[in-house]
Image (tube, rainbow, N blue to C red; front, side):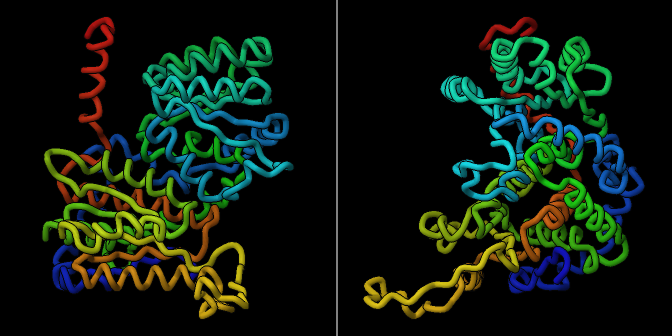
Length: 436
């Protein structure tokens, strides 16, 4: 297997293949709406051809910045919320060594995040840890006025200027923002920060392949060219408008909607590698914010197995039968570790002697799928060969494209988020913000 693959075998006892086939004309029409830019939210489709439109010059500019900055800092603080936070966090977590922050010799800076919450203790503890560390900041905001990142940036801007002096601080702050307008653009121009542009036609949750994600990922030490190459390949694969079975994004979108129409209203994204926990968090934002409108939409949830089999596994096995699972399975791990013989065998695990840990994990995965399907939970399987930049790039574009197709199938605009404003109006009123 060379590329991402979608397997729907374990949903066909719940929604037969002819039901899937009945979506063929509708899904192909919706893919055409996307490609022709004639559907809802068509002014927010800059992500659609993004992988193939990123130039070598753009990649070089970002990589040159990474080379210039990352060797002189211990910590990179990324300020952002929503898509301005989760996209980079997802890729960095997936590609990082689980314990790299504990290694004495680090080839790349430690990545910390701010502006993704309004927690006084979090900001205080972050400022304390930065006191004796060399650091730089990437602040990401289209407007520069979003409450959470704007508060964090106020504190960090003051801290870095006090620590290094204004002139040096200006060299250590990178702004990813609008090309011409907004508070952060004005500040960046006034202060002379290095800047990168967020395209007007790309929403936050679809922005990981713009400088919103690429700048932090490159500064974290990862190969953004390979990430883009993976996304570019998936862009080409998912162009098929004629055959849903040859388009992985289409078959995933179809399967989700077919299950939704038999009252499977909650989708649980399942991972078996802790490095993919934030992939699930990014996926939840992508699908929740895109589809949860007009009293419609599949509720996105996630679990990380086998850990959550000892908690959420009970509910999934025997709880309310309105759920289905989408399992991300990885063909091969990065390392090889074989279980050893123990002469005393007090734990009764000698039957596993000689088996790789990955084999045990795979059998746990297979056994869980069998149990859950038998228990009334359909399973979609998404397979990739391994975790690296290329295949993460494939996953990113695959999920984005499938989300757009699925949203059109629900007959909603998958690119806006009007409901997000409701809490803000109440919060601003309670805080006595002028005009509220």
